[in-house]
Length: 132
Image (tube, rainbow, N blue to C red; front, side, top):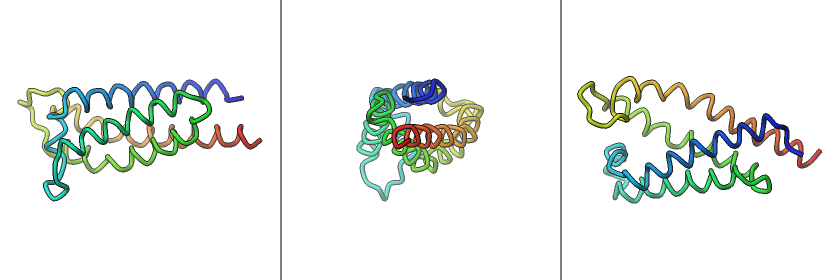
């Protein structure tokens, strides 16, 4: 059985990823400038990352797939970090989008560390409880 702390962490991560994934799909233009041109169509990458976030959220929400979802979440958060750095570098005070405002763009960067740590904790605790 999973600990209450793990269930709460998994739920919080799932909610965050579901929200972010939905924004990626509903407002892809917010994220498109973050995609380097050499990667091709920005829309495809933005939609793909949104779908990945929704998939991770779903996997975290279900106890049977929680460990795999937590591992995938940690990898996804590390993988999108360069895009978040680019978003912070491109932020400016007069931005119309809340995500492009410097306080938001720079403020979210240090949050990646505890989010990755939380995903790793969920994976570790879920794994220990499944095998133990």
